[in-house]
Image 1 (cartoon, rainbow, N blue to C red):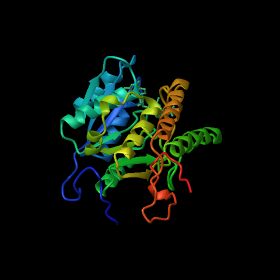
Image 2 (cartoon, protein in one colour; image 1 turned 180 degrees about the vertical axis):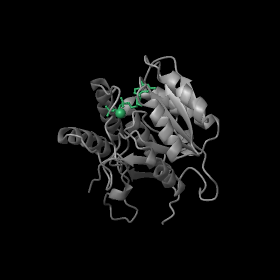
Image 3 (cartoon, rainbow, N blue to C red; image 1 turned 60 degrees about the vertical axis):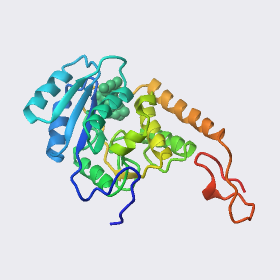
Length: 278
Ligand SMILES: Nc1nc2c(ncn2[C@@H]2O[C@H](COP(=O)(O)OP(=O)(O)OP(=O)(O)O)[C@@H](O)[C@H]2O)c(=O)[nH]1
Ligand SMILES: [Mg+2]
């Protein structure tokens, strides 16, 4: 296996990583208990924080009961504006404050398979700063998705990936592991996105800090219980974020002239987000 030099920490083979799984919930009473049990079964060493945004069902109570039974699970009840972005920021705040090495984002609706947790952590152990669970790399899949839905999701990723120059296939994936040092390098207080926009925003910020980003194949299964909170507003926010940021990139100074004296514009010297010019 090739060792990758990560940007945000020492090589990790020498010591066990402290992992915190951040599980945002909004009305997941049908799923939360199973989700917590699966996480504990598949990655017993990980601690968990459930970040609930005022669920109208019994999600926080069920999470608390499971937490008392299994241990090393906390339930954070957020007040204030709901949103996936703020919920993750709150969970990350807990993890960074308590010195965890790796923080994992994961949905509570059972779409993300807890069996993939180990490979995400392993990817960080091998040197990545951000390991993204990807539906669109070899070995990844979205079984049961109609062709139209897969195409729409892939088109969204392609739009973000091309405009922001991200070398990532699944930019909107919400199943990912961050090295704590990378989260510290990102100004989380200024992240005001939510939903898919949050995932794109964080990927872009990670890339700008020079983080090593890798993708790990995952099989994403549609939720079978509870309601999706995905909305047209969330998709719009993500599209606007990408477009605005890409336009912002265009205002940056242009490419750097090649040092070989040839006078040609050298593509490898072009800043991310800008077009190479010959
Ligand atoms: N704390 C918190 N959690 C949320 C909020 N919105 C969604 N979630 C949780 O975030 C996870 C993903 O939400 P989903 O509604 O499944 O969104 P999705 O996975 O993008 O969309 P689907 O493909 O339809 O499932 C789930 O665990 C939700 O309970 C929110 O505003 N606050
Ligand atoms: Mg979901």
